[in-house]
Image (cartoon, rainbow over all chains, first blue to last red; front, side, top):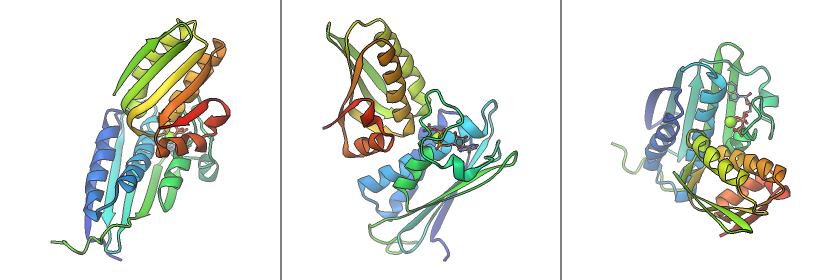
Length: 149
Length: 103
Ligand SMILES: Nc1ncnc2c1ncn2[C@@H]1O[C@H](COP(=O)(O)OP(=O)(O)OP(=O)(O)O)[C@@H](O)[C@H]1O
Ligand SMILES: [Mg+2]
């Protein structure tokens, strides 16, 4: 299925951009007329994925984060968060709740939060090459076809 | 994002407001830990009533403060949680370590 609308963003992996990234994606998702809870779900999931790029993918340098978001006719929203950083050795293990390679103040819950607030999550990663997280959520609001122009 | 700390002999209250993410958790952490470590109160209360957004960094924040409070012999209470934040903290199993109270 072809999306009815898409956006692309490229940002530097600076922590000050975390709020910018989640607010921008949420503002775009607003075209699907989501309710307050659904907007919070998207904001939280995007914040997790972007923070992971900043703290894990590029731990000691500033790299690029690529965000692509798409709106589909049936109320489906898709967002891809991609980095060209460190990558993940064992994706299945990384996605287990409470698993973290950083410890300290990290709870190891980012992926668990993304899973619980989205309908679908896909993680593709290659050590040394980077990681792409794809999140999907179906919004219950009116469909985006109504005022497509 | 802001933090407001008040204290009585028995209780230290840390009231947070705004958005808690990885970026601003660092500053909150410094202020909160200073207060906890110099306090003699046996109860640390973290008030989430005015928090408008939180990701897993908020969970890390509570976990970290719990560890410090515990090493100082104090217990931790997290209050005024919205349904969403309560669910996230339960997801982390925080209810086994601290008292969680909803709005
Ligand atoms: N973009 C990424 N690049 C490299 N490694 C990643 C990336 N995203 C996640 N990881 C790895 O997966 C682990 C689990 O991620 P998750 O977000 O669930 O927990 P966390 O980031 O460690 O802690 P929290 O999100 O609770 O602060 C991380 O500790 C890290 O090792
Ligand atoms: Mg994370």
